Amino acid sequence: MTKFGYRVAVSFAAVALAGPLAWCGVAAAEPIPAAPADVWTVPTEPADALTFIVAYSFGYRIPPGADPQRAEHEPGPVNEELAAAVVAARGDRELPVYAQSEIATVLRSRYGMRDVISIDGDMNPDGTPIYLSTEGVAAKVAALRGTASATDVAGVVAFRDHLWRATRTTSAAGFVSAAPAGVSMPDRYDPESAQPWTTGPERYLPVDYAGRVKLLFGAVPR
Image (cartoon, rainbow, N blue to C red; front, side, top):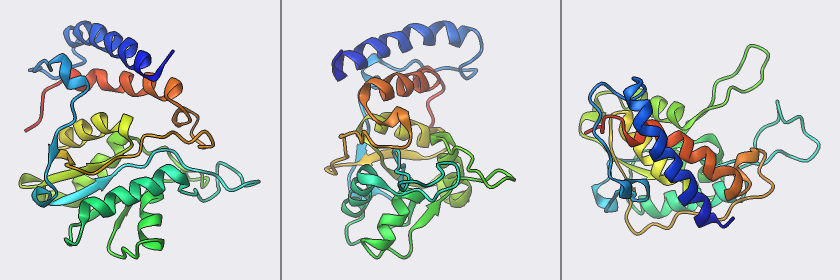
């Protein structure tokens, strides 16, 4: 099946499931149904309207021969492209940047962005990492922004197929959020990614659309 075919098939499944789930109390108490076009449409804002940037990573690499449960992640090509998108969105403005660690590493080493705030995952007592979800990143950023979120406009940088959900999840954390207009997001999957679901569209798109169900018919944030 083509990438487009996966999008159509899984999006229809998500819409079909969302109605019954809303009646079962999964959605917010006062749901505002989203139009079908919202499954595809990512809001955008001019770069000069943004008050900060949040960048969500997409997969990573593990050094050859290293223990995948304990090794330091290598960014890999997709996160390198996401870092370039952050730089393009920020331009010459001194916008605060909150980036997952795989992107923050590239911003510091390649672009000399010393003021980037790295959003890192937590660790188990045995030293193994705890998976950091899209919702987890947004929650950490919201905690760091504090009362500034009342007037914030978040510029969201994410992999193309992740961008809709990343933007809506950032909004659900309490921000006005949008992708920076005119900034190209990476769309080529990394078949060597250590996260299996990020190695290709046939693995990733069902996961992403399943994660959209609660956002499709939930209460739409400001």
